[in-house]
Amino acid sequence: MKIAVIGGGSLGLLFSYYMSKKNDVCIYTRTKEQADLIKKNGLHLINGGIAQPPLKVSAAPVQDWKGNEELAIVALKQYQLPGLMAVLKANARSSVLFLQNGYGHIKLLSEISAPDVFVGSVEHGAVRANDYTVHHNGIGVTRTAVFRGDANLLQEISSVVPADFPVLLEPDYKEMLIKKLVVNAVINPLTAVLKVRNGELITNSFYFEIFKQMFEECALVLGLEHHEEYLQNLMSVCEKTANNHSSMYKDVENGRQTEIDAILGYLLELSISKNIKAPLIHNYYHCIKGKEQEREGA
Image (cartoon, rainbow, N blue to C red; front, side, top):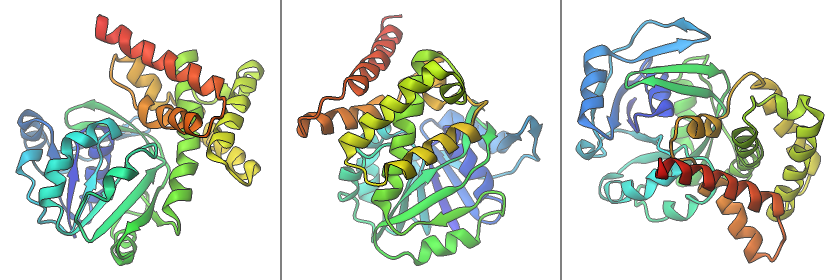
């Protein structure tokens, strides 16, 4: 299958590496410099501290993307999506899979004219080491669902990925994204502010109290049924990624913009629209925004 991966961050590099094992992949990056480095050096992946064989892939700056591939995987952060919309509207001719966290990007997807629009929820842990190297720190799955169009291509994708990088098809995109949103809304801001690894949120009894209260606020704002199922999934993610630092922790640590607006920002707007008091969501949102402001003033 011919696949375009749009985005040269950790997820873009991760998906390009694994997808290129069985497919014809071109990665489209923000800068020509990164594309040139990928073409020169190939893609490098470090899994569990062990370097894997480098793989050669095509690479080009994103403005060169013409939408000729069977599938385009959009692996940008949600706050980067608005800047790509003009390119997507002009060139998305076939199928597009969006891999953003949060739920706020859903309102943008109806602007894309592609016949098939899919969304995904990535449960892998990945950290970019340089422009062509990514660390695969947490092995998981990629869940996908149809936003609009036909599921046939998603079923085909699941058969053209390596066994150690499974892609699963879920029946309901809303439920899939909300489940991931709950995980991101609790784990990411708490670990980033408390400066702890994921597992400490449940092994430290004092942090665990905040963890549970944050979950209850999210459940209330989202109007979740089956609380216990969502809580068990959240705790399971914490246990499986116990030794990992969350992506938001790493973003704050490295002075990068976070996805807080796509995650807690979305929940905060929802709580206001529903007239629901959500003090922890409010406070942790502003803590992370404060960290971003510190970076801007540095």
